[in-house]
Image (cartoon, rainbow, N blue to C red; front, side, top):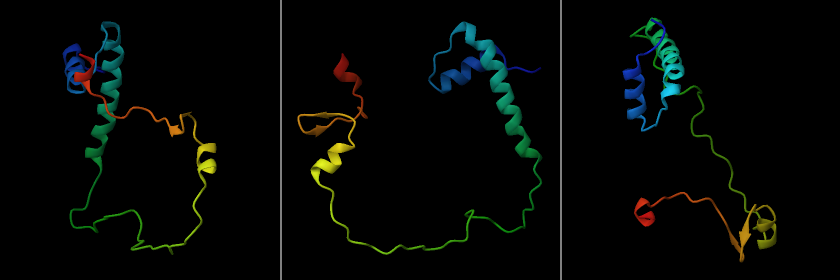
Length: 103
């Protein structure tokens, strides 16, 4: 078998809170199977339970940089790089969404 069942795909979609169209199920069943097959390869890695434990990929510890006092940017310099300004305010994308306000 080189694919997940329709029920398994729908279950994964439900867990991820995704809507899956009927015509997408077959494509996702193969793709999810391929992903899970790659993840299963991790089980084949031989690990020495008594070997050295790697906590971080580098040996750098407490790397500090010197604080430097620099002049502040002017308002004009800041606003020069802003993509959208309305009445002297920087417009940013909405990051919080209140579902109750749309009711």
